[in-house]
Image (cartoon, rainbow, N blue to C red):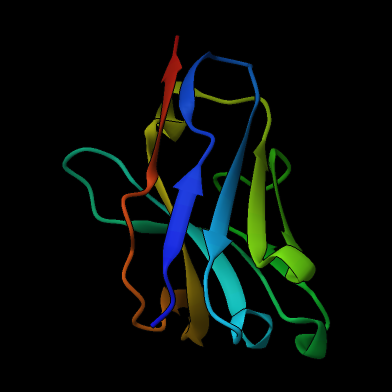
Length: 125
């Protein structure tokens, strides 16, 4: 079972930046597309970004709400995935989670790993 530990969240003013990290245990990390999701209070968890494996071309995809502001990357040697967030908006406030993913219709979903505790991002106006 993959263990996921997200970190790097915090309180930032609108327009600011943060860089989230996610450490994943397990030797199969390189075999999975990796994604970031977020969940705001009272809302469902939603897809944010995905980076595919090198075997899938390493392509990246983003939710429309974050396209052009967020950048996902991965370090396969360290079993880590990152999310650089720029031009943050109050509506980006949420708990952020990473997970190994598979394509699901027009989006992506967690393959079934434990979400972990996530990391809280709060953007003040």
